[in-house]
Amino acid sequence: MPTLLKEEREVITAGIDVGAKTVKVVILKDGQILSRAKVLVGFDQRTSAEGAFDEALRLAGLSSEEIEHVTATGVGRKEVPFAETDITEVGAAAKGATFLFPSARTIIDVGAEEGRAVKCDETGKIKDFAINEKCAAGAGAFVEAMSRALEIKLEEMGEISLLSKKAVPMNAQCTVFAESEVVSLIHAKTPKEDIARAIHDAIASRIASMVRRVGVEREVALIGGVAKNIGFVDSLRRSLGVDLLVPDEPEFVCALGAALVAREER
Image (cartoon, rainbow, N blue to C red; front, side, top):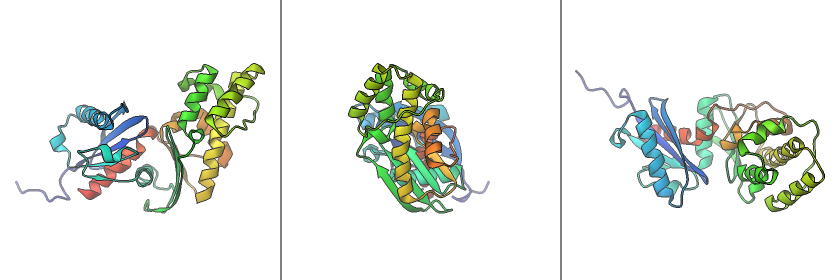
């Protein structure tokens, strides 16, 4: 039997996204996702990355020797010793989102510690981007802190906010001051659903301002772990005045983008 050319062989690659809170891994085979894995980031980023990679390999039924190329992304991308190449979070976001949504021209990525807005062309090439990295009030950590103040489970915040019938302004731009404002609203007997909506509206307002700096071009895709929060999605949709494309597994999109880059780099 003749040997297949490199372009004709089945190509298996992996992308690993070492974020502030979790490590995500995606393994691809000829552009199809074989497995996904996610673990919490521990004290040692390298150990966490290795653990997530091993879990993804187990789920795919593969050994590390069968992975042709690994590309890392995320804040801890330099802490992945088994990655041959790395790519910025912005580049990975654009690559992964446009793979899932070829019509997307504006990509919004909101994770635990920061938010990003990317404007790209039809090939996924970056035209402009902005990052909110100086304040957690523009990221998932803000919602998590506010859920503790409200004594509501984080995963319930979105559903509760959708029950709100009244918009309540939240003026504080800092997580510390916002928590004090939430306490004041609780003491004023403000319904929890209205406070939850105010929290999501506040973070959505900050993200929308960042997105407008790079320009809103249809279609708009929302990725990152916070995209799983339906309350935030609703608030951001209202704030931007556009529909949002949200994938089924939004927190894995950057890892997917890295795996796609790995396929090009092999």
